[in-house]
Length: 418
Ligand code: IMP
Image (cartoon, rainbow, N blue to C red; front, side, top):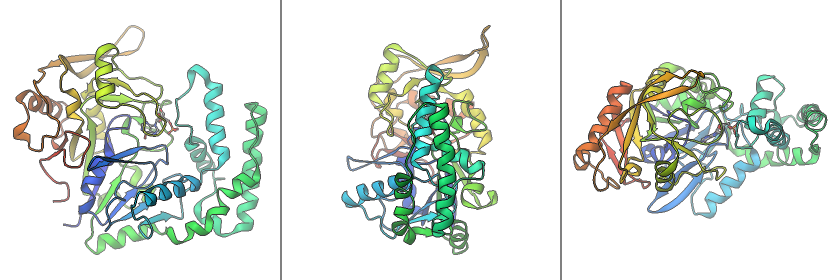
């Protein structure tokens, strides 16, 4: 059936979207990224072999699929080609499968330096960014001075604008942050220097997506980061610099909202956050240690340990509305195996200092393990009641449950494409 399915992270990223994109890709002719950049880290495990993707859509492991990078994505060309090399060295075919929008804003080396200099200057008040230049690249786009993929094809005017941008970036780096400047040659090498390699991959994503839909082919839109990191609706200022919610697809790929048929919210069975910012259900001590070590909660982009906490159904309820979620996919249920207490946040109350304190409900724990379970009827009743409570509190049904990192470790109650 011709369908457009969207995958959205419902928390602060790292919900396990990569695995689910990989799992659903055989049903789609194209997988599309529409926002963010190589700040994302999508981990896929196939037959025990791990692949981490940052920029290339997570459908790339499949032969018969086109992977598109929409114009809403900020693009680091050196990173794109490094990721392609890595994949090809691992025996994965990339050539002829990737299409990049000519509208993508380019990330310059000076964007990376500005991102890092700003974080250093903020000190204790830092955002905790991935240090990949994402924020400054989006700033230049919105300021209407940014360089885009299509600009590479008029070398003279590209160089002119590059010099202007670099002069401005270096002024801030040197005069405001007291840091070293970035050279023109480095900036040219990482943009114009890679133009010829990029040329065969450039295309009109919007047109291509519409054409495929007309031909009855299905599309999978792959969100990066998570709803709570959305620049407008997230926990500002501790957010990323793009819109991470479903609304970003229109701008980021040039397709209208009515052409989206099914929106799947990916949610981990507990919560994590990497970087600074509020996290009402954060825990420490033994529970945090359990979630962190069993869930291998270390950032796949920066290697930083992720902060861990209980499931926040109150936040999910809001996120479900923001994204018009059709259904949920709950990931990493197996990480809750072996806990002697499981809490779920149902609401917040405001403390006298204005901080939001979670109100918890205690859920029954289960004996044994749910790891690798592939049928809901094989789950312990306590695990089923945990999932049911998530559905009740969020108002959204669960169609997919992930019980381990491998493709096979999945319970599919309903396939979004069928
Ligand atoms: P930036 O996107 O590098 O500017 O980082 C802004 C915030 O978003 C920081 O808290 C990062 O840790 C967070 N962030 C960015 N990308 C991801 C991701 O893919 N997963 C989880 N957190 C992310």
